[in-house]
Image 1 (cartoon, rainbow, N blue to C red):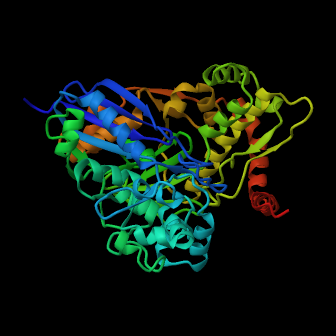
Image 2 (image 1 turned 180 degrees about the vertical axis):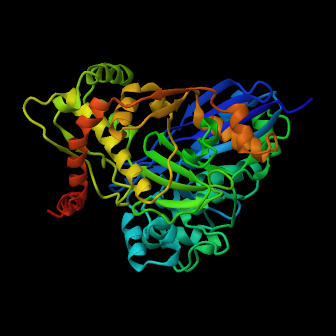
Image 3 (image 1 turned 60 degrees about the vertical axis):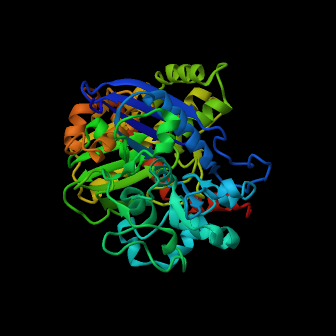
Amino acid sequence: MSDNYLIGLDYGSESARGVLIDTVSGRQIASHTHAYRHGIMTRQLDGGTLLPHGWALQNAADYLEAAEIILGKLGRGRRVASIGVGFTASSPLPATRTGIALSRLQPDNPHAYVKLWKHGAAQQYADAINARGGAFLAHFGGRLSGEWLLAKAVQIATESPATWKATDKFIESGDWLVWQLTGNEVRSLGFAAYKAQYLDGEGYPEGILPDLGSRLTAPKRIGSPAGSLTEAWRKKTGIEGNAVVAVAVIDSHVVLPAIGAVKTGSLVGALGTSAAYLLLSEQYQPLPEGIEGVARDGSIRDLWCYEAGQASFGDTLSWFVKQFPRADTPSESFRLYNHEAASYYPDKNPLVALDWWNGNRVPLADSRLSGMLVGIGMDTTATAIYRTLMESLCFGARSIVELFEAGKIEIDRVLMTSGLAQNNPLLVQIMADVMDRPIDVPALDNPTAVGAAIHGAVAGGVVADYHEGAARFGARGYRQYKPDKTQAAAYAPLYRIYRNMAASTDVRRAMHSLRSADV
């Protein structure tokens, strides 16, 4: 009997999702989602240990529980050719030499847990690294983000030397999960390049921490096999067949082949809790000013991928709906807000917001920044504010596109993906109007998990390359949003106000003071 199925795993901020794909028909035949038991820990650990302001942790045990449940639901009794993993990043954790997460051994120690990508308390250490500078920053605009692995490593070593001493491996959670599934510590070039500044031929940066290199491992490019599922995991899940596990991929990057973004000129917006914007190019161009980073072979093989992002996207709208509900459930509140916001037009809604509700990634790489709303008055409604928040997210996206264009990197096509892109057509239409360009949204369920499955198919030899994987298992149709020229013209003056607000050093200085309570 041949191996007839692929499994793709998508590990997000709140939950993990898996899809099962028939290799013959190319269709999804099942999916399953599992919420993490401990969620995102921002105030205290499970045992009651309080957390400082700005922390965001997760429990690695939740990842294993999710894998066991999802793989069992999808794969039990089936012959699985390959498994691919997409994982939110940068979310590193300290582990022992044998791969045991340190939080399992030190459950009351906050520094022993996964530092989720939105953990903002490491920004000061990123600032210190940036001030020293170094050649390794060349592909990252001369600066690191506090969201990334290096800053978080320095935070542990500085604030809890005993924890750092007990850390044999400091590893991205996606790489750690692959290690657990296969028994092999095989790291991904995507994580290493974008989140730990690894450069082929030179390795990881030196001079950050004296002994950091011994806790890291040289990575393999995406689409590489890490090994097959271990016997222990086969017994837990009932999976049969080769079950080759691919090296992990950053969740926003893993979606690319699923939506047909496998060639130069494709700009993809992965709109989730945060947003990532990925631009593929055959030719290397120097990193445009303000863009986060660029690497080759970390997203799609044989292509350079330029990365930018917004630290807060869907969670900005979720925050608003949670704080100002219109109905008994969030979904109904969203429906009501979207329905009413559709009748608000830019020339009748003179509000402007900054989209920095969880800091700014591009162009400032500063997690200490915060949101801002200007123009509010006694006649301002909750719906008007909701619409303005959507517009601010689109203004932030447009500013990123303009940075790419200023860097002379060609954009042939814009695609937006995620459940948010599929389920909120008003948001995508505003995006098209603000950018004044057409936007394609793939008609595909669970695109991130499907992308992970395609990466697994490449690693397992089910397909020859990403082009074949995209054709066989990816999106087969798209919904196109065309800009309304009247709306686009009405947004132009609001966007200028947004840019002026974003450029104000006085505004940023005030935000820093408020965050530090230095007032």
